Image (cartoon, rainbow, N blue to C red; front, side, top):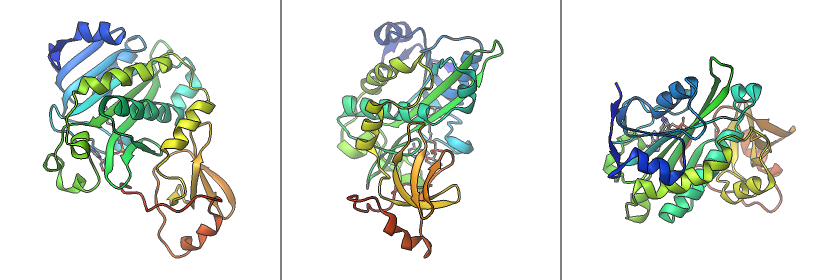
Length: 290
Ligand code: BT5
């Protein structure tokens, strides 16, 4: 059951709404998942830009039903309703949405905490060698009135110490606190995040633009790594304008559009570095492949 909260970071919802220039802010002390709340609101016609924030989630989700684990009050747990205005694309939910929200979250973490994060396709924010600091879950559907929506859920680890993570996550997850020794307020990151997402509230799910692709190149954690995904094995070579991961394989370039990537390890794969893009040195294997 949802438990409403009058304040977040000691400030009421109406003040956040005005400060962030969004149509509505729903503050919850506890809920199953902020994405579930935002999905219900989107279906009921909530305007683009409606924000849901929780201190605690009892069933926080990642992709494919995986768990998102965050102790109460330690993380930014936020979902926002976007209205892309294209029914067919919204339902297919191309990875452009995840990439854009990932870029926005990366810029916000830099602005609010001074930490530069890399993006691990399709939806993780990581610090290479240190672990995953944030995750994105974009879900889309069409409301009963035919209006398509996308809910972007963002979880950012802020105040966790190593002991706050369950044993199985300790080596692969990190937080702003573990990285910097400081604990910025969640609002210091939420403000820049909502600013960065402003252009996408109503925009269609068009291909990634040159400036977005450039920003991605600067943050690409996988480039040059030898990966396996969707039954293909190859060297990661950035992303395409539709958000697909480009893999250089023996058979040429393959585009990976769904699923997860993991390091390729078998002996057949090990001959593949021949296809490495010129001038790109191999990087160590990803830290946080599930
Ligand atoms: C994600 O999925 O990374 C998307 C996470 C989105 C969470 C936000 S919080 C607000 C909104 N409401 C929700 O219910 N969800 C969104 P995925 O790539 O599937 O990664 C999930 C995996 O990350 C898990 O299987 C764990 O291995 C790992 N994990 C779980 N909690 C983590 C944490 N706090 N920090 C780092 N890694 C974590």
